[in-house]
Image (spheres, rainbow, N blue to C red):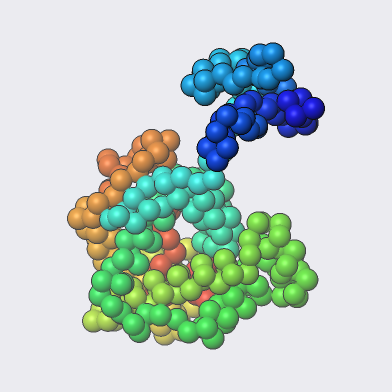
Length: 319
């Protein structure tokens, strides 16, 4: 039959008559598809042996009315997806963003800093403070275009080898071997690329500070002798062997140079923080010991940027 319904899984089709322009008086069939058999039955009314077609506007209107409950039921059955925060900006330093993931990386990388011995786990607040200080220094390096401060790959590899051999945490896990080093990285959530980038930044900052502050500083023999008598000798107990001034003079001079450089560096970094635009966006990461986010960091929270630090990061004792 020409006017029968052709029912499919995805819908139904009915045939309605129309006048053929090429053959006046003759009727041609026009197929109209509906989204479901129910709608086809509703809108394709039988008129004698033919089926007539409802006006398209009414078809659309009734289709929306009949389908709306189905859409609402589907929406209620589908659980709403909860947004997942992949990362977020926690601070901005002169238009340079610091992300929450940067804080996590800084905390994990702190295991490579021997200077944190006895200071406990690095907190997120102190980690952010170190990242702010490092960002200010690196911005200054780029501003002054200090090309000579960029370390070579050989220097980075040398520093990495010293850490693997001398860092106490590495020694305990036998990091001198490739297997031990891989186990150490995996245990602390680190990667070789991340460690190399971290060491490269530290070496760059060390060299920059040495070029900027160490040159021109001189330590007089009187200062060395005063340190020897007033600071070094009281550290030795009765009956212990005391080194002579000549033997430790070079080391005392290095210590005094480091103290002088650290003082100049602290003042310089303090000025950078005051002059720069530093904004901490996460209130939980603001340091309550600081008057403002741009205040200077305490010595314990500053990155290890001492130009005279030993390769392993430890202060060498005077013997």
